[in-house]
Length: 257
Image (cartoon, rainbow, N blue to C red; front, side, top):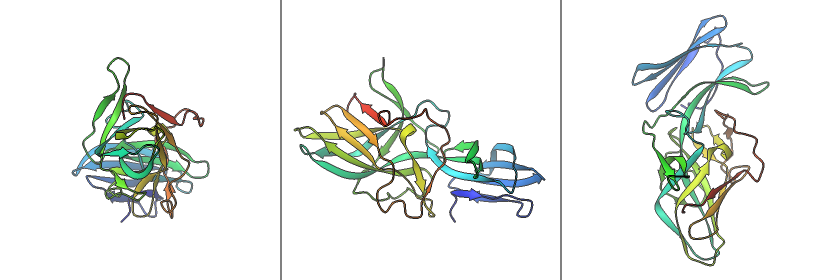
């Protein structure tokens, strides 16, 4: 049964319970305007909240979110190391799909004005790693993730396990040199997540423009590739980044690709 989506709660249905890979989420009606939210990890309660709802207007939403909030938010950047490097011919381009890590976010949500409040954010994989991209003096802290690239734009295996999302990436070599790509730096502030009825999670199309053997510019599209978004829902953001102009929807890779 699909986990991601919107859940209506009322005194009639009494609430709901859903099981994930490691966690179980239980929402039950306490009285006329309050529900109790509890998350269990290995059947131990680890998070509990009381949430005030107007049942006819509000719902509980369980959506994916980029994995930058657990155990606490340190950065918006995700550094993806490719387990299989990609060698690009001069002036060539190639389409691949990577994975990025995701967390699970629970919201109290009002559809009519799209207002929401984060109730809980947690990670189903259990292992969260960070790394430094660049020099110790002025480098960037990044969420670290290892991904095996697959050719073409297609949903990766494991994108339905609520631990990772498929990221369609177009690599473009603007140089007259052979270049090797071993990693990609993406900014979750510019990433949109989508999910379908099978709990498969994916992003919009992303491009990495290689400027030299060491530098590249990552840019972010407005929608997933054709075929990805059939029957898909756009996920709520667990946090709102600053207003982004097209110029700011770019990420510079200055310390190696």
